[in-house]
Length: 370
Image 1: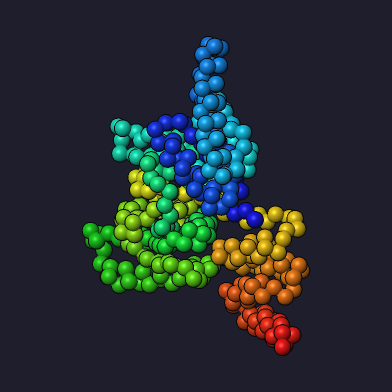
Image 2 (image 1 turned 90 degrees about the vertical axis):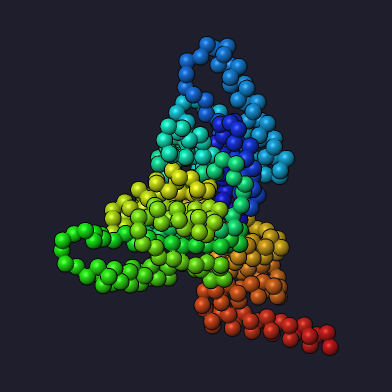
């Protein structure tokens, strides 16, 4: 069972790359993922001897990182060395190896501007259809609090779905915020009751927010929601500070009814401030369930079922538990697991069915012992 099967780790060997590797290792450890290393050399015309020396130095550094990853018990493959545009080669390689996520450092900010995000990282975020996990320079791997801004668009729906799954895996607090941006101009000469207008819009927005949240399974999670009013990028940055978020997960292109592509522009503003590490998503899940299609032991299927239950994949967990029953139809922990899944799904009849099966087996064993 894999939720994140393959991580593409793009490294530039600079000062912050060691921390980037540590973050990738911890992510891979949490999801039993494989890391594929990539380094891109600039496509410049070197003398053949100089080119050979540079390539050999890069390969040596890649092998050193690969050995480190392997020593940490993480699966890895032969490192990839490319030439050309950094962002283009990173994106092409991610597509080629079918990576679940690109992990990249935040890079060096432009010293002449207020933007804190490096040029390559920003280009990869903008151009990649695959999820991108940008690690803030020198930020340790910590996921205790996740912030997910939503505007009810398909992109923010994807972001929230993945936020929930990541929060479950790391037992993190999840804060879901949405920002009302009203066409509010008190300086106008028109006679408008702005207070009534504001309260009406806010009430309608909260209803839409609640309807949106009903699509998601938030049971047994530490989460809260908040509606904010103002400029979305400003309010989201405030929320990040208030909640002391370790990670922000955002959709990259929104189609808000209030303002077309509002979330896309907001995302750009927020990530350029780089308050913490972040993930951007467009149309592809970072979390994608991949079950290994082969017969395994009772213990394997049971452990897989319990992990799927914890991650919120209730129907898939039931399938794993039922595989256990084909091996041993009197396995009590499995029956309990199935009942818990059906309880989460709200299927009370099936909860009672499997609870009764458990009680019947216990009774039969008890009678036999007598």
